Amino acid sequence: TGGWTISGDFNITDWNFQRTLEIQHNQYGVQSFFSWTVDTDLTNTSRNIIQLYEPVLALETRNNYLNETKDNEVKWRKKW
Image (cartoon, rainbow, N blue to C red; front, side, top):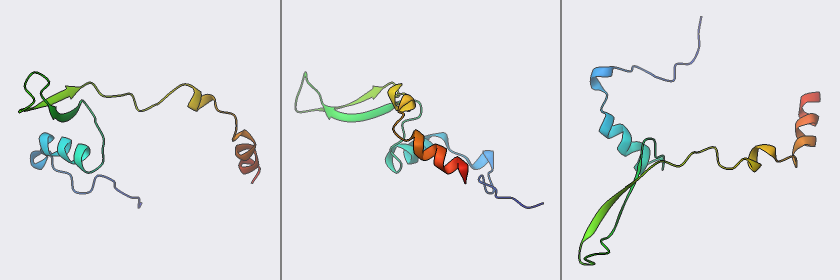
């Protein structure tokens, strides 16, 4: 029938969770389950520490979904 597979030849035994998180964070800037940074330790400035944070909801603010400035453009596109 055709179609486009987005998963390719996925094999669960070859999948590495840690590597997937590294790629998401380092190459794409995506923080799925947590975000992390390396910062100076405030209690001892000669050392660095790894800080873990909860992820930020990617939906942004409510106002972005209520913005009516492009309503006319959307209506125009629906006509065609």
